[in-house]
Length: 393
Image 1 (cartoon, rainbow, N blue to C red):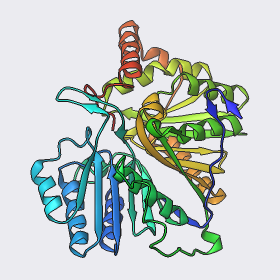
Image 2: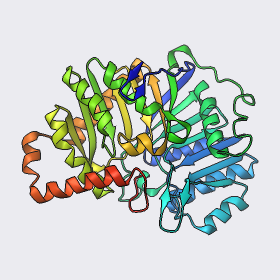
Image 3: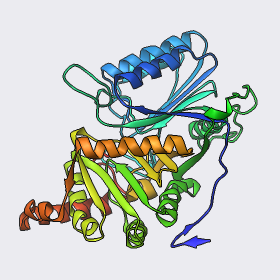
Image 4: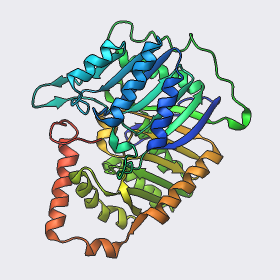
């Protein structure tokens, strides 16, 4: 069935899974360190940003300790966003037995970087436990003295889907090299058995234009076309393209309450100005807007009808839709979805400023609106092909 330019398909869910929602900060990195410390066979860590800072060094030490125990450690980071990693750190990693690689674009030079970016954030340990979300390895996502973490989320998952995640990581690691499709993930590890009451249906969703994957975009279209009552989207760079706006508008016009949580404080001024340029369209189409006030919001999560959830690295914009390698997990579990719904409602009521038509009108003038329009056009056109001027985390 065709929906616009998308083909509506439903990938298979695996049912033998246990999920837990995690929030970024010190607890997240404590857990990541613990999982690495308990590894026995293999670790795949793939991330957009790996900073050469306090948090990065902490995870490096955990990975080096695992490698010393003869655990096979594969660390892949994006060649653009993590280009500040020092040669000394890379030498330390490889000398310590860690397999390290930059994810490379189609073309690059000293002043340009063209092609895909590895935007997903995933760690898979021993094909039995994984974390997928929007959290990079950086001080920004950790709680440090006087500097609380940016708001972000990940999903901790155990069960059958972890083996599939391992295969995704392995294929990404091998890339176009011969034998890339021969994944050792499925056959070398036992199945994890969970109690029935813990089970969640989970499916992997990916966007990667080289491999003709646009599954996460389809998930958001499916949410908008099938929702009966409400869709809540928390997104760090909310700039839906023309096609996605069409589905959002149709959902709102048939009575679905569409609520969007965006950041009030931004690490990327051009993105925030571009986002504000869309406020008029959102408010005109009865989309509720909430600006998070406590810190920078970096999460990417959505819940539909308190029935199912998607979480991962995907921002609702054309960069994630068409340019980056993205990874999300969709979860069908009524209890989990209701908990996520309540959490997002709590964020909106306690930590956000509701944007009204009147307030938005008073916040703008001709000059501001001009700069917002310019930001929107630059973001929309330039970012799709070139990423050497700006940096989307």
